[in-house]
Amino acid sequence: MPAISASAPGKVILFGEHAVVYGQPAIAVPVTEVQAKAIVTGRPDQPAGWVNLQAPNIGLEAPLMDLPADNPLSKAVKGVFEAPSISRIPAMTIRITSTIPIAAGLGSGAAVSVAIIRAVSEFLGQPLPDERVSALAFEVEKLHHGTPSGIDNTVITYALPVYFVRTDQGEMKRVETFKVSRPFTILIGDSGVPSPTSVTVGDVRRAWQVNTARFESLFESTGAIVEHARRAIEHGDIKALGPLMDENHELLVDMDVSSIELDRLIQAARQAGALGAKLSGGGRGGNMIALVKPAEANFISESLKTAGATNTIVTQVKS
Figure 1 (cartoon, rainbow, N blue to C red):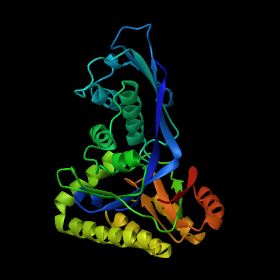
Figure 2 (figure 1 turned 180 degrees about the horizontal axis):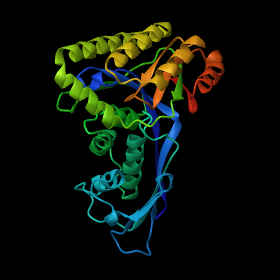
Figure 3 (figure 1 turned 135 degrees about the horizontal axis):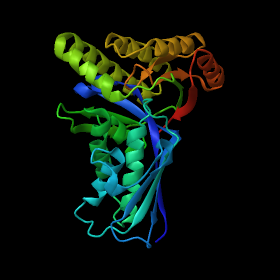
Figure 4 (figure 1 turned 45 degrees about the vertical axis):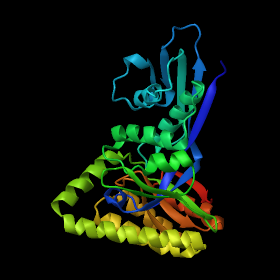
């Protein structure tokens, strides 16, 4: 049986993080410059059901049966095995690698899950449709983030710009890919500060419980920005996105999810000529993004590194 491989891109949230957990829309786009990859190889020398997981990026190599039930890699694999159509599990080795930074808001966990789910299901001769891949990855996301929005698994599964709304119960209410009339360039700057999304999501939830009216107002304002941004993208009004990014960032500051490091990078990007900038993802570390003119991307990238960015990625958003 030949080896089977599958890959999945990273992602960034353009608009709407945190508010999306409370029923407001968000927009996210894939980042194909970074990828997670899973390779499944048959092991006829081992008994049926024997599965070995290798994840050199995190120093893991272990039989599936030795991993705890709450291990995300284990859950992704077992999610495929539990499908009613799977009756026999041949012996296999699953090797997972990724160039996506961990705990940086780029969807590393979801990308790894999607790559595993696709590679394993195809190896078993039962490739899953996108909807099922996303649903299984969402279950793994609950281990990573506690109360995930669902946007990471969605945009990474479909690998297209996505407008996303979820219900209060966390179920997908509406997922839409949409047209990008004019491609535009986003510069991603890594603050170098790891920031598990589950921590900031939990902190925002506690703050919302204490001061519900104030946070509902912040979330609604964020949702309005997302709607304006979608219209601007669909109509090719790219310049309008810069001020909307700036507005969205100020709302995230009010939610107390920014940081000194992120604010420094955002200010540096604006001073270097970015059309707008904001944090992206959970905040308090991880990444920020800036809307830039392609010709100025390298200069702004160097400005971010001077201001403390440990890495930058330039990506073009298009349909």
